[in-house]
Length: 438
Ligand code: ZN
Image (cartoon, rainbow, N blue to C red; front, side, top):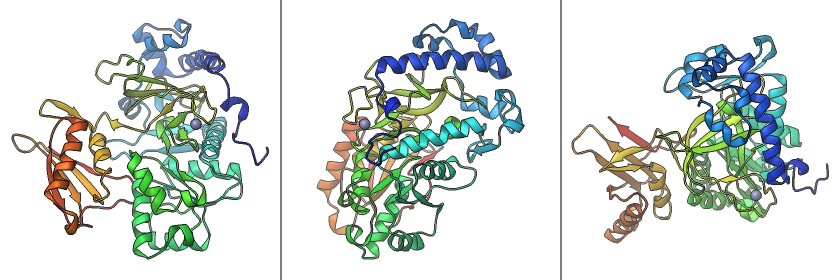
């Protein structure tokens, strides 16, 4: 492949929407038949819903098929894949699982062919963000059970980048490594990039002169455009001709690589030749209108070990169909995770996604860190937003400006508290900026 190519797989990435839909339909028919024949879980589920694989004549017919939920995976797939497994264990040498912080871990197995598909889609995704052969990538995702570390690792090596398998932590030493090894690419959660950026500043380093970072690939948590701008500036990415480009994925869909941003940074292209996306209303399960936001539902179009049909991600997003300048016209974009179905709370009769508040807060450069506390232990419930602002920048005008921005986003005015800089937690892994007391 030419080093000049813009695409990892030109014929796929530039295909027309018509061709993509034909490919999706063909793959979907085969996948439904495959799970019906091999997975006792899907046979039972389809039978109970009164549908057969042959009922799918068009892509739109998929909505007749039942959803798969996280609860299904906890109940029927733990520990060895259970009734969701389509091949025997001796054919699934690869394994990952989630941390299981809110219940039993969600386990996923992969055949050699699955692993090959995932590595390829990750290489395609990373290449799209700007990673090239010869890059030195410091991989800041946790290695081990979590899909992030090893997923990025395999994908980057496939491209020909050198990977420093850093995993998480030891931030002081990490900054030395970025400088001494002239790292050009960094992966990790946006909140960790943020934290690294703060430390670079504290150490008196100039990211444009002292570091070589060109591409950051934040993922695994919600972030906002304002965070992108800060990360690009704090890590010196634009000065080196690159940027911060988001990646989206989830363990249940192999891991990272479901969607990524190209160099135009206008939302993440969903790799819809492998993952078929739908958006639904989380309350009714019905498809949402073309420009509406909804819960992302994904179906594996190419998977062997444990394909999932209509998996409810709990992530709220939108689909953008306007053509992107990069030419990947058939692959719709998602602007990021706009909220988690489970994070939403009802306050004064309004359903609030904390991300909407976060996005507004980060428009204010005075705000260095924040925490959103929803307290249901008192009556009436309290919604408190704590913001770190240096004392000299605090003023009633700033408070009013922030409250009015929040009001525009979620139609309520929370209690807003200034707190000391450095008093709120910083995050090395996934950020926990929303606290629910109940
Ligand atoms: Zn694009």
